[in-house]
Image (cartoon, rainbow, N blue to C red; front, side, top):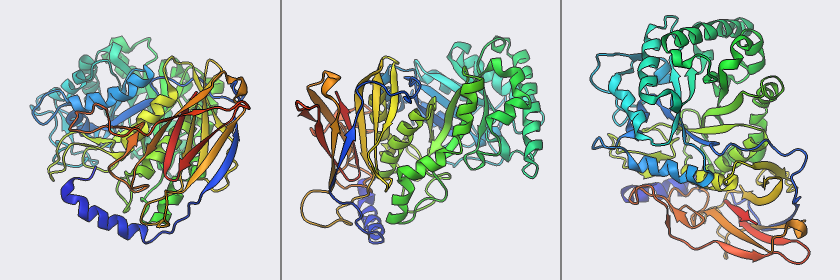
Length: 524
C-alpha cells in the first residue's frame, strides 16, 4: 500500500503512466455455457494447500519475527486467512539463490549477517546464517516447510551442517520437502554449452548429496520427502523432468515428493500502460505455461506420486524492473495464473516474498528506508483463489469458453465431487478513471451463464475483487468487501458491502456484470 506521505508522488506516477496508454475496454456481453457435471477434461483434485508462500533466505527471519523480536502475528494472520478458507496446511518454502550461495556458521551469534530489513538479498555468497536463525521456523503454528539446503558448492560439509541444524528445529513431521539446491542451471558445474552434460552432472550429483543427507539425518531415510530440480524460470527447458529422471533420478524417485520449477511472467517489468495490458493477458500466460506442461505430463505418466509445483513465483523476475507492478492488475493476473495452473494440474504455487523488493504480498516489518509494514495489492489474489478452491479437498477445475480472442476475458468452473459449485470470471481489460474518462460507470461485460437448470441452485451469490481506482490501484482493494491491513494485524475487516445475490431464471441462466479490471466469484 502507498503511505499518505507518498500519495501525491504516486498519483503523479499513475497519471504519467496512463497518459501513455489508451482506453481499450468497452461494454459488451458474453454467453457462457456451463456444464453442471464435471467435464471429461476436468483437472485433478486441487490440494487444499495449493496457495503457498516462498521466502528469500534472510527475508524469512523478518517475516517470522516482528521488530520487537516477538512472533510476527501480522504474518501469521495473513497466511492463516488464506489456508483457513481451504482447510489446508500452510506450506512455506524457505530458500533461494542467497541461501544456496550462502554459508552456515555454528558459532555465529546473530541469525544472519545481512538482516533483510537493512539489506537486499545477497546473491554472491555473502550471506551467513547462524543457529539462532532456525528459531524462525517455530513461529508458524500448524505450518509445514519446503526447506532448501545449498547444492551449489562441490563440497557439502556446510550443507550437511545446515540441514542438520534446520531439520532439528523444524522437526521431521513438519518437513514437507527437503529441497536440494536452487536453480541449478546457474551453477558453475552445470554446463550451459552442452545441455545434456549439464543434466547428466545434475543427475549424478543429486543422488549423491541425497545419500549424504540421509546418512547425516537418519530420519530422512525411507521417506518420500525430497524436492528436485527447482529450475529457474528463464531456463525452464534446460533442466526438465524427463531427461533428469532418465539420467539418474529414477534411481531415487521413491524418495522424491515434489519437482519444483520457478515461474515469473517475464523480465524486465512493464513500463507503460499498454505494456501492462500485454503483460497480464491470459493468452500470454497460456503461452508461457506451455514451457512447463511437458514436465507435468511426464510426471503424471511415469511418476504419478510426484507432484509438480511452482515453488517460486512472481509477476516480474528481479522485481520492480519497470514502472508498473504490485497493483490491482497484477493481483488479477495472479488469480488467472493460479486458476489456469489448476487446469494444467499444477500441484501448488508458492509466491515469492522479498522484504525490500516489490514482489511481496505483504511487507512484514519496517525497512531501513522507513517503508512500513503493509499488505500489498498482490495479496488480494490469494483469498479469491482460496475461496475458489473451497474446503473438503474434492474440488476440480475446468476452463470455460468465453469466445474471447483478445486474451482479456477468462472464466473457470469449480466442481466439488463432480458437481458445479463455483464460477470465477475475470475481466483483464485495463481501466482507470484517468485513461477512460467517458461519463458514467466503468465499462463492463455482462456474462450470461447458461445451462444451470439442473444444478438445483435458485440463486447465485456474487463477490468482487476490485478497487475504485482501477487497474493501477495500490490501495483501496477489496475482495468480497474485505480488506487486510497492518493496522488490523492482518485480520480481515469488512469495509464495503458490494456482494450481491442474483436469481437464476427458470431456463437456468443468470447474468453477471464484470467491470473492466476486476474479477467475480459466483457461488451457487
